[in-house]
Length: 522
Image (tube, rainbow, N blue to C red; front, side, top):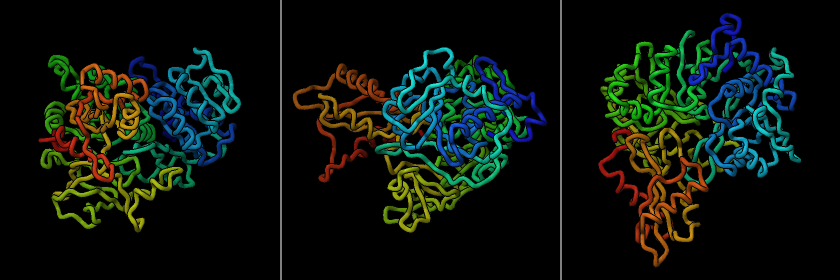
């Protein structure tokens, strides 16, 4: 998110616009804002390779909070703003964040989280002039963001250096993992090699206008908005996604590029025909999607509606590898996520042997970029092959005619609306309920979200299943977990299948709901 030469060449061009309000921040102002915050971070003692975190909904300060780290040689962690205080506290501690930037809307959650971790010494509150700030604690000072940065100069810091995000990827069990990439000693005008090829792949150009409909804590919006600013384009930020608003903004702002998840496609397709018919999409050149399997019929309808401008890719935040294809290729290879263009893919069976073409196996990459899971050597080792030359995130798929198809996940990761959800935490919570003897949580098909969270519960002896108990258990989950992790429905079984070792044989349950479905072909 380094504006580089465009500050001088096009100082008045909007770096970003808030879609709902129309508030525009020019390249000149964006440069000044990121410089002021970079000075504050240095003044607070953050040196190259140190860490800070951002916990906010989409707002008019988000991009500068990232951009300052990218010009100060820092790692910044954008945290899912739906998390609860204990989840936030874990990430703040694990990431070794010294400063937290939080919105007034999320301040109460942040305050509770900071009671559980002592490493954050300063909490900057965006919108803090409109709320009552908490009293400073023994370890954390609370300050209004705007007032705090105003005292610093708007010129670059003397020791500018390339920084980057350190985002967290969910696991199937336990805690999320911080993905750390090595940072070369470079000026921030240079970008990380992993992203450089995307400029050409997705036809990025200087006067592009990019519409960002997703939460900015996601890795895909992070990369896309940063690349747009590096190209001198304009980012239009939706505060939250609404299908009808999205179509309106494409016309209103002359959007040329955008990145979505399949859920967004589905919701737009369900709009009334008259709403869809009057949408002016003539400016739109490239629409990219990823993050979750896209049902074939949904993608067919989108290409029929928008034309062959839809690009798909497959990748992971870890940067193991990258596959991509355009609409023309996809129409020939329906259901594919593309050809591998970064990393060297090996499809391996359970014994670590290469699978024949067309036979599913676990996807292992000789990685496109080096990474480790921060402060988690065990998880890093778990993701690596025995000889340390390959890595995996547990996806299963096969190659056919050079194109990659995803069929399953070796873990039971749930991807709902582009959000990764690990079910073990929900299972562990349900089992603590006095009426529950055993529980299994997994993803089941959802035409809109790709998958939704399902729980199957074994009640204690003497209780009969009922709608009232199901409602009670769902409310219990909502009280203790993020909304995204809570089951949308609960079914009951007399006894859950467990192996003699005690391991839950979840596939026997999950397969009932996925009968006649294939990942990506719903």
